[in-house]
Image 1 (tube, helix red, strand yellow):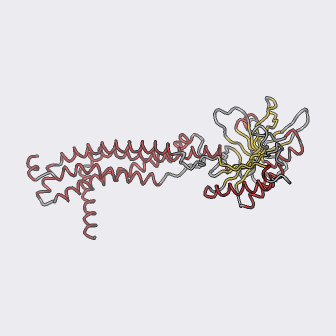
Image 2: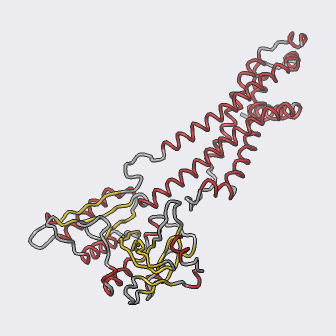
Image 3: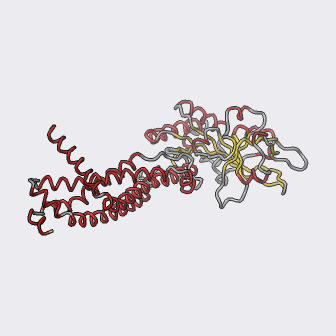
Length: 424
């Protein structure tokens, strides 16, 4: 064991010395390897950022895995009592210790701007909704417990809404009037946060807390909630974010509990139709980002193969130029195995050094704030750290390329005979 270790260390030292002797030629041959490893590592790391962007976009639209949605309908054509639905919902969250659950109500609120009064699309939600849907803010903050306890309703508005107000500083607690009609004053609300909009959005929109909308509705009928489904299905959507491992089991028990709680006296559970379903991107069990991973992997392999081909060509030329040197070593008793291992280790040591340089360059490139802004395009709020697997992959790929690129030249070197040294 000790002898093998000593031989390995000696071979590495010898290979490093040979690289120093031929450093100009080696440097030229390794530029392509360093670029290939840097490209490979960068592609894999950027693929992770793209996947994170796609995942966050999906979670903003349909919730994080696993998001369960609950809806109830009466088979008799009568409306489901909203108070009973809310009470059953609250009881379900408490019974199963579900931290992230939210009601979602759609409505419009009349808001006066300098250009006139506009009916603004409004989503009334509970505080956990922001975390469940990765709501990203550019100014201020999402709803807090203090906002829920405040006398004035709190609003989180989009960028268009905020700019139409003149982009006031949020630390000044800007306010707007909701629902002012016919000269009658509306409800004063405070803006606490601003969220960005997509390039295709042109209308103002906002979030408010569901309990505060309910209080406004009770005091002012014009603030009544609209049915997001166009009637017949109740006006409130209920959703919860639970661990995917228990989602299937939880769907069954939640459906059972709601069916039992909403059953009409004398009619039984058959009078109510309760649906519990998933809408998040991971509901089908397949990897939704498989295509992205395959494309990234294919590009990475292609880049690596191009670098390996360049290194093999240069390594073969190098061995041809060292025939005299290798022949002399054979004349002094160097075995075929020693020559083979020596030439092989030269390639491996060189590519490991080039791979390390390529990985360092990749880290500096990917973790650059300018690169993150360019790739993220404002879609990524939780930028993943530079993936360790990408760095390890780069070093392993460099070692493998060195071994493969050194294999053919090493075989050529083994065939060199003492007489060849005289000819050259």
